[in-house]
Length: 380
Image: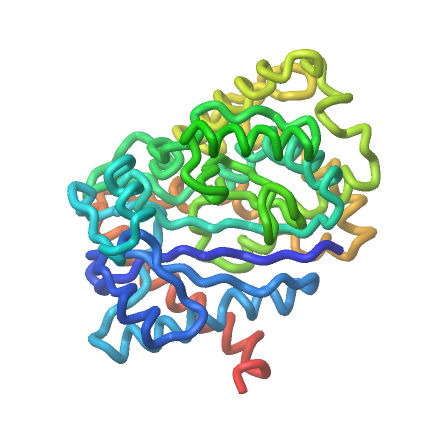
């Protein structure tokens, strides 16, 4: 099994659903929490682990500590969703007015980047195998977004997107190729930095990127950045198990590499365009989006592609002891992702505010139940 870790961004606010910027206080008083450019969300990072039970606790315990702290300073809470569902997207609330990079972000992108998400990091120590994994995962990343979509609202309105976050997020630089080797990634990154299209090595904002201690040279993990915030940790672990099993399958069978297994293997620009179009389709319709398969060019629904992938990776997952974590993927396909569930409530007459309030309460109750059952021995 590979090492996994999460970067978790969440909004803070009131039980009524309004988002309130508290990151200055949180990061000053709680260890292991870090600021985002806007003060309305805050991030914590879990340790890289192979064991899924420990991963669950790594996800839950910081969230529980954050929730307890928020309650203690004025009855605040954690707000679900990946966009400013109840507003205000007109203003940027700077968390660090003296940070030059934050100034650049505010001036260049505005509140389009004030989102909350999950970044899944999976360890692959060999840089060439890592770049290979990035190729495959990037082409299938729209499926992960389809499972995780949780941002159908912005400023109190239904936007028409299931992932408004990914629909508006400024992917930077505008044109990121499918990297053919570690050397290609190094040369491309150096060129972007020299041209100013990237401000620093972190300024690569697309669905999947190689990561490590000294990018682009020292790499050791794949970072999947396309996920909306998944509030249910069991579902997040299921999505992660699906991703890990697919990566393990590729590491065991390099012929799955798109450079050798796609009918478009001689036209990498075509492959990039396919995945870009698929991402945009999934941002709108998530599991019900019609996509183009990178391998053979056929059209199919995102949910059907996920079912195919689930069946394909099952033997690998079973062999590696991951299969028991996967069934929650089928639950998402059956019940819908969070965005779809929320939109069903809106169709029944619920207001956006009432949906967010109910989701916030459900998130807290699920969290308490899980942490009490599974993580209590680790609290001390």
